[in-house]
Length: 405
Image (tube, rainbow, N blue to C red; front, side, top):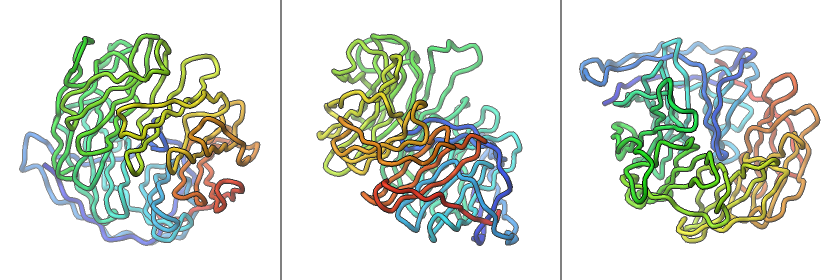
């Protein structure tokens, strides 16, 4: 069930000095919590779905926008989210953007994780109190569809789409008073591009064997599907004998713990895997020891088995890979503003560049080719700064983006 909201394309948009939004982890997947506003349909009352036309946007002067997340498809086409709750789209590169924010109008709403599949298809989760809706566009943001979920929740951890029709999301269903070491979740699936979302089942008590979804114990870090049937849920282990990876082979209807040999007896945090061609994929895992080193786990058989790299103590889980060998990573708190590169799947890392001593952290990296990449860093005065490289990360230029919001 969904409501349709249309918008005429606005010309490039701009923004005022910005405040920061809530963020969630991603494996170059940025899952940001944004303060926004919302219109919602009552899922129990089909007649409550109404068409809400939007006024024609009034063009404004170009002003610099501050990005909290960027997802480029090539050097010209891409999407972004600003620190003041706007969703942007570009076909002219990172310097000029168009505001295509979903028409959410409740002042208490929070924008959550988004998936930008291609130049036309995107999904974003919006929370109003404990009511969650998924907004979807298949026209590059010219108009949006809203689908409320049938179950209340505290937030959406993330979403995963393998094509325009098949997607999954992980909904946190914990309530006040839930044990801090637990996170009950519900898995939802869509087979029609987000027009309808079906709850598969909810968390079960810890036990042996196959279950409907991963157990409530442990904090979930994400969900990721490689094919319409093969997927994973990742989590943070709270003890040395907890699993950090759950695997489904039937589109998410049942799950079983998947062991990773190098993690035996280690507390760790796993992040959703990313897959490339020919069943190859890569998954970062952070070990829960003093230096919090990162292990890059790779697979060449579609995730049936995983092989780990040597732990790297100088980087964070903010990484971007273009295949299982070549990738880039942000330096940790001892190396803020540093970008590292690897050409052997994370076994060794080299300093690729320094973005400057004014940065306290790098929150996102995205490479789309061996040469073209983008980074978002946070400065000491808590401003987000966008950088781009055209030579594989050797040199970076700080970029100003403009829109009329």
